[in-house]
Length: 105
Length: 364
Image 1 (cartoon, rainbow over the protein chains, first blue to last red):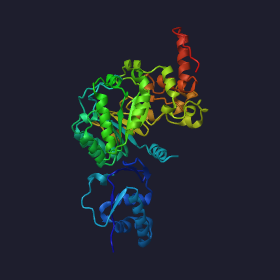
Image 2: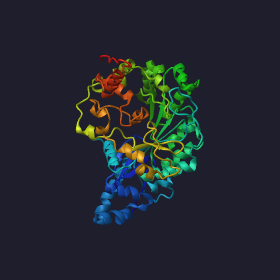
Image 3: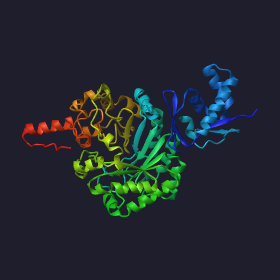
Image 4: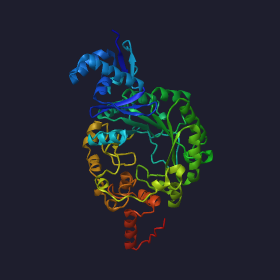
């Protein structure tokens, strides 16, 4: 089974405000507010943890949903966030994250 | 409500400093005649101190970070500071005069994903711009810098401060911005120096000139809307806050002093002595600023313009009372709408009562 690894885009600004991430693209100044699920995915997107692990360890426990259904929804959401330039998707773990301090945000 | 308005509302409710303006130096390679800063570089925070501050700002929830000066590129660690700020995922706006922008600097700002760069241009004519900046050749270098930034895909805003010396050049600067592909903003506000010296106010344009600007649709958009009489003052205006200063925004000087705003010189603490969040949450000065509602304003609470005035509490503070009117904003409201402000009436009554002067409010 192929895995998907997700990492936070280096082109955006991000900050948590009241439990939700606010994101702004430096490319076109578009402002986004992520919902609770998208915020969990963003915060876990370290490039090393697979999306399946994120779903099992974070989303299923948080929302009490079935892993397969949650994974399908999370994969769709991750793709949407990637299309918006907020996340990057990869079939392999990302060994070097350009912005090391990303884990602080 | 726009997403940005929602964001501000959420930050206000949670007492989060959403925006911080950080001057990393007061040193500058220009000597603009209207500048409100002294250019003494003594006591600036060093690189480590600024990085520590940035860590604290990120932890406090700051999202929008304006890095400015003085001329920030004078600091040899300027890009180290921006890189650190971007690593902390601030949305970075960079203010510069662009004189020191070359290919390398433009490329680096793009690589660091600075969201926008703001640059002051006073005129499209070198003799006027250079006359204000006091640096021969500065317009040429500034425009060259802007073109490089645009070539690298950066969003650039040209800020056109309007004063007596460049009054007739706003249209020329607007056209220059359009030709380069930069955004254009016009600001007729000249402020006293941070130390309270008001001599710079002599540079302000006259009310008649301001009226001409406010009637120019190229500069203000829809003139009828912009100059419409103020709507009746409602409860929202009475219970509302004057501006974001001290509520969701603040200013940090190169020496680490925290103020509600760059135009509001009441010191609230120093990040060399206290954690930023401690200052933000507990400074008596910030708590006082934060407690002021529209209904608490002396004079302005009875003014027709209360809900629409651009009243700057910092300018009011520099006139002696942070709850009082700001003369410049009274004038703007009057010139814009033709409706006399409560502050203007109070001043006229006061002067008449003292027998010193008779103020004649000209018809609009």
